[in-house]
Length: 283
Image (cartoon, rainbow, N blue to C red; front, side, top):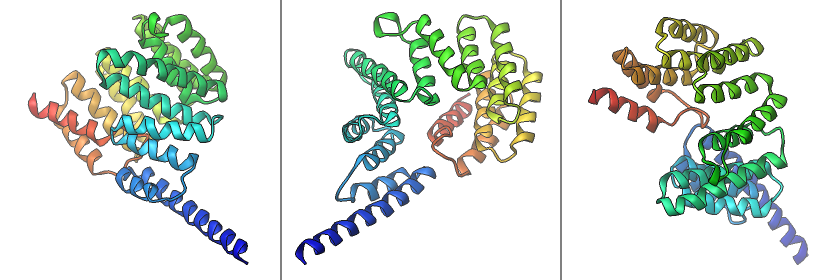
């Protein structure tokens, strides 16, 4: 009887924990990271999914040290989970960006290793491949970067998602200042995914950077017709205006709409929108 009671008690704890994780994930999805963390921290028996979600919450709140701490526990709990390594790599990447130069080298090296491990565990993890591409493109050779690695990663991305592969190739072409080829790749990405609003946002951003404002506006207008309720479009359009120092009052209106909207973790943080607003007010 005592053993059965213990089993029932353990089952009740696990059931309650599962409910709590679901509730915490719902809060995460609407960017209520503090509330999500509060629920997760109270779970008495933590496993990989709990640690992983805690890590995401800390990451989104900008506490990258705590993010790496709990994400390392997630990886220890499930060393074959590609997504755990992806988020651990992202957390170490941000630590590299925000720490002193001596520490940054070690953090950057870990970020690369974890991105590579994530892509090795799941070769179709497009997010891991994209993060690897960014690392290889931006990091110098002595830190494990390089254009040869970047080109090989573009090929891997194209095998998983041809449209995304054209976008990835455009980033390399743009970095080499081969703007005609970069634009061609972006347009080919649209041809393969004509209903993905993100593909049009990519092209509009590129055209704005090239000073081709009328074409960019037409592309933004098409994106808005395609997805009139897409909140990220508000941010991307405002960002293009701010960077080009054009239509600043419109940019301000778009950012205020963005700040009052419900966003997801996949959208730019509202802190970034507030920074753009400060740029407008200081101009």
